[in-house]
Image (tube, rainbow, N blue to C red; front, top):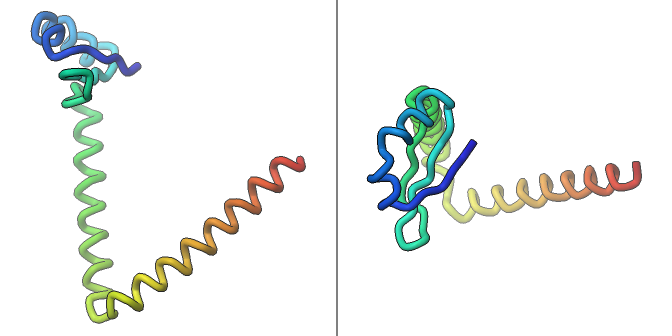
Length: 100
């Protein structure tokens, strides 16, 4: 479960909120002036997020290296073409589901 709390309430209830995250595996979004500024999450979830981010960075570096010699204009044109194709496929699937 995800709950939201103010920074002031978070400071006042830190121990309780740590237990909520640790024992119930909840997440807490901390707001300041009504805007989210931080989140308290379970350490296992944080580790999974960190690993996914590292893997994303590795893959991004591999893609950048593979396309380093492709002119930007050509690369952007290819991205736009593929995006258009995928969107058309998604729209076709939506229409198919509506008919069913």
